[in-house]
Length: 215
Image 1 (tube, helix red, strand yellow):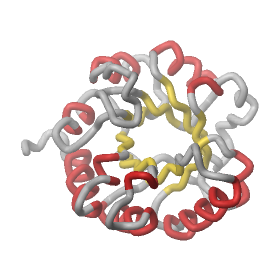
Image 2 (image 1 turned 135 degrees about the vertical axis):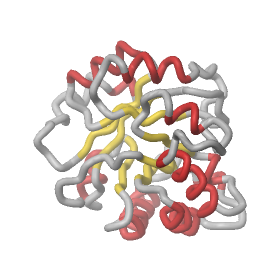
Image 3 (image 1 turned 45 degrees about the horizontal axis):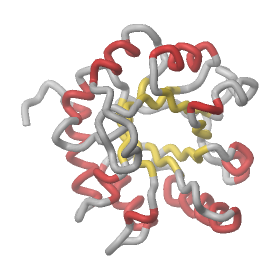
């Protein structure tokens, strides 16, 4: 675990989805994405068996160490074992993990939320950040209609906890997201499916760092 880890601002997070890998392996995409500006990698492989998940977690920790923060979805014990920087929980586990949150620890806690009320509850539990979505329709959450940037504005004007926007974000809409009060964004297909993941990450990061600049 990186000592005194804090969420970068702006944050460009890559959520993994190995099923989207075609010409490049997952590790190759992660390396390229970090080279392009990704500063947080979130391991999210729900259908992976325990042994393979452990192997992948340690591999990604090695790739990200000293270069990007590393979070694992839901697996707090594994995150501790591989010295990840934190763990990320889905919205439905908000109450279950209330004892995990501790604002004085270097181990960070991320929390998915889909509404202002859950974002407020997450802040009361001292999470390190909320991952707010679904902002735009996305392939990973086809059943969710996009809430749009108004949700970001509503939440950012109410809570002080950093907000990472997620859901259908790409180079065509990232500026609108960055101007709505989000600390950063989390993407899957915008980088995972890109022909050049490094370039895709670089272009997203450039907009995040200069939101007032016209494209």
